[in-house]
Amino acid sequence: MSAIQEPFSDGASTVHHLDPRGKIVVAGLFAVLIAVSQNYAAALAGLALALIWLGAARLPLKKVAARLLVVNGFIFFLWVVLPFTYPGDVIWRLGPLALTRQGLLFTGLITLKSNAIIIALIALIATVDVVTLGQALHKLRFPGKLCHLLLFTYRYLYVFEQEFHRLVQAMKIRGFQPRTDLHTYRSYAYLAAMLLVRSYDRADRVFQAMLCRGFHGVFYSLRTFSWQRRDWLLVATSLPALALILYLEWHHPVLL
Amino acid sequence: MTEPLIELRNVTFSYPGAPFPIFQDFNYQVLPGKHVGLVGPNGCGKTTLLHLMMGLVRPQTGSIVIFGQEVKTEKDFIAVRQKVGLLFQNPDDQLFCPTVLEDVAFGPLNQGKSPAAAIEIARATMARLGLTGFEDRVTYKLSGGEKKLVSLATVLAMNPRLLLLDEPTAGLDEATKHRLIHILNDLDVACLIVSHENDFLEHTVKECCQVHGHCCQPLPHHEGT
Image (tube, rainbow over all chains, first blue to last red; front, side, top):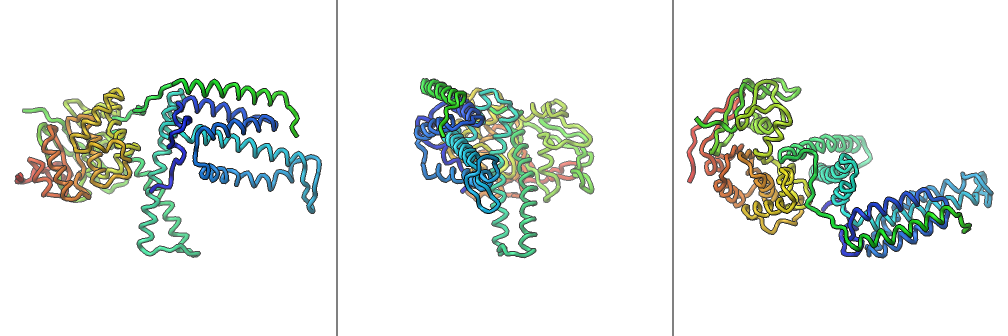
């Protein structure tokens, strides 16, 4: 079984049935808007909107939480560093370290914004499988080369992974056990090098096989997208919500 | 005399860094309407010969004429690949779409067929090979034999005039081999089959050639029943 999975792309919720093009556009606008926002009101409104989308997508919450934990693992390091290094009013001292009020607020804002964007992307983008995503981006007139890059990266990720497992198995059946010695390091180096060489070769052969079947740089899709009333509904409800976030951002209501 | 489907004239080819060329002043003709077996020891150039015909590697000197047209550039070979199908030795190299149906429809779509027509062709080809019901199976989770048959379907879906098969029986069990023999014998397409299995060739081809550096030497061959 492959370790590369798309746990959120299978589902029967309204969000899964939405046209991927609409979801990409809305998620893109949302991400940009939240990323540049500077105040808590906008970030909180964004988080609320993202949670509504997440609710509508009816995803397994345990898996969503696991994803968020990974993201917040990175944000944890911001909490370790930023509040102590951001200039501002000192509210607490620990030896040479000074905790500032502005630092705390700033880190909190980053945490809110990151989570809002990730939740929105999980709800809107992760509910589309990668192949469809590539095709939808293509239909949205994204540069063809970028779409192919996405699709091929995805495709060869599997190849890479399969080669890796094959090599690891080949090592295991000859009694390889990782230890802390030169033999282990050398074997791992060989593994990495061989993985690179073999994946490159295999990618080459896959490409040749595609050429033999008439591939000439254009992906045709069996999938047809149909824009329906529910897609208008997504756009019609999202745009006012995004406008509200923009309004909150401009008017700087003091929340804290 | 009938016009050969493929003709290699004075072709010289060597892989970069190889001490001596695989083919030197190599001449060979594939005539229409025949199944021909290609045999020879490992490394004698059987696979390379098929790759030369598909334009996956290019000869250093000499010319390749396919369907009466000399082919030189990538553009020429793009046209050739619409009419000549190559079945790779390893089906894992050939299958790359998530589902079987998408993979079989990939070729017809490249030929400019509409999605609906491509799906119809794919389904018909799969039915011909006894693969009905495989449409939504995931390609990398098929068994070895199934992968081989699906690979063959992806090539046949393009309705080739000539089929190049690179060790089609590698890793197949007896039952799948017999299935393959029946499929190939029912095909109304010229086939060039590279194989190490005399038994398989006896049942599928009318003549066999041994691949050498200069030519393909016809071998005495007894057709099986």
